[in-house]
Length: 472
Ligand code: AMP
Ligand code: ZN
Image (cartoon, rainbow, N blue to C red; front, side, top):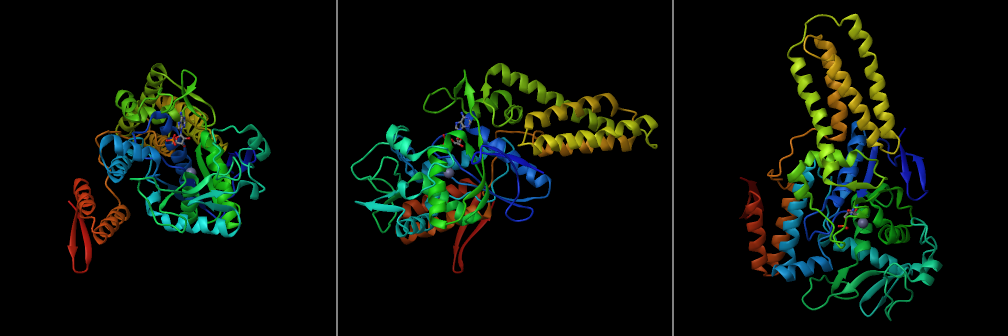
């Protein structure tokens, strides 16, 4: 039985999935305008491990992580660099996927992009307006928070207090009925990308994106919604208000939030300028060390970053890597005979190590404890599964070792140079974008997409039957 600490109830709860042996999981993804820092890498690694654990015990996980590819920060970056927003987002999506791959984070089942999900977003805003939960003023649509009685239930904030305190950096404008009302749609400013809508040529607010994408790829009610703890308010609180308001169904049964990665006991963040890119740290210590380091603490405990701690993590991981080498050597230097009496006795310890590993993982994914059990197994292997031991004994130890380390995804060859190839689904999406650009007579954009795909080793051909692609 898996127990998960649910931010909604503020306690550990037994996990029951909506559908048997299936998990519907949504993890808020990055806004793509820069390389991720190692603080951002924490949720990547943690929730990938949660997913791996569910899969290891037979669940089928539909894992959705979006890319926010329209945002003020992206527009600013494009202007600074004299590039189009498409150029910026295509580049950083590719680099982010490369980073995730370097961390041994499996690709999501779906990686939707906001700019490709406008229909669903607009539809959801229309529903909210029809239900009296949103209103339009001069082309801007706001969520009417006071019309959603449960507003504040996730973050445990009380609307009246928020109103009175006027905290949380939410500015009052003349248009809004209340301070806490937030934007669902806003009109474009000159030179900004925009989409047509019943209210104005413009673009969606950040929060509505996730509600619409979760609905499309996972349904009205999902099992787990996850992200860093800074997302609880306002982002996730607003997602609850939008999704439950529009769908009239519970949004997510479990809410998981990772604690921060700190540096000098302060949150590592882009705005504080105290961040280190994952690239820099991965190059210096190895990406697998970064993964190991993140798993060495429980995800709800703050974790401090320093060079010394990374060095210690590297040494710790090294011990596990050496155990694998030793076991592989022992496998080819075994004695072919029945297990000895002593080995039979020792082998009885293996199931208990395995079940303790599962207990740790099932207790709100306590990877720190799970790793300490792997270290016990390392010690056991180094002591007993050596040259000259019997084949069946060494094999049993090796298999358990591989099984447990694989669940945490800690043993892999990390190489920064590895290119991540686009999936067929992603290529198809680019082809559709190019076809739309051609239709709109934006040949420059169509050519850019073709060249971008060429760079990814994908050649496209226009045929009478439509556009075909091949990988080279
Ligand atoms: P952002 O790009 O700031 O929206 O962050 C992307 C993801 O990383 C979100 O889930 C954040 O909560 C998470 N995150 C950002 N900074 C940190 C940090 N220092 N420690 C842990 N998670 C973080
Ligand atoms: Zn989100």
